[in-house]
Length: 276
Image (cartoon, rainbow, N blue to C red; front, side, top):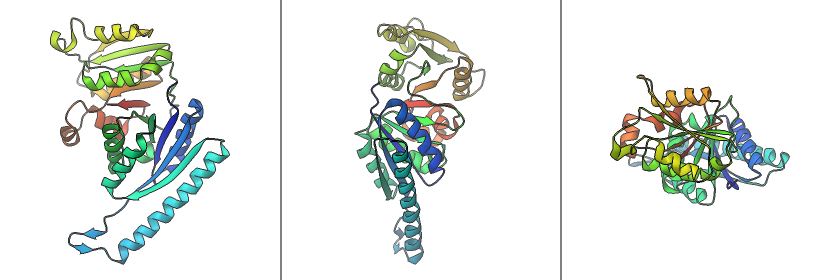
């Protein structure tokens, strides 16, 4: 597989659980695990006034907590015989995004668990720095279900858009190794200029030229949310992983009005690889 450096981001919520899932991924891939222990700092000024002792006390408390997580992380990685490095990043949102961007440039895949995703602001910073700026795939690892980057059966969410095509290209090696790839279109646009003569046929032919065993499926949502349709179908076909493109609309529109990507980031219970 092409994933040799895994960048896992953990926060101060459920750090042990998120780390355990990242270690499982790195062990499976025989990859180096790079861990960022991240804390979003409260700004040092409030309006036009400098912060007082309360801010300093909170900063010291946050840093002590993150330092403890860093030490526990290093101990767990050493105990499991992993090649690893671990650093603490504690800064306000913009600097955190920049640091994630810098680190993600030298990683093959980013990994976050439910603990990080419980913090919507931190998740947003990870998406901004890692997915948008560094253009690295992001693996969402939910608890309660095994997650693998060596899947036997894959569901590729397809809508004939650039984001979906980039996600497919990013995961091409993975799909080549899989036994079966289901290209799934929910309420597909059947107009010729969007999906060609038959929705899904073009991408199926493209994947088949790479030796991938492809099944094309067109599903009706029946007024259900697209993310719910995808997750339920993934369970029905016993898929190991959903692959999808990130943010089909503008980032601003997606944040204000939501969308499939936003919903998946917040509450999915199935392993998903997001790329852009």
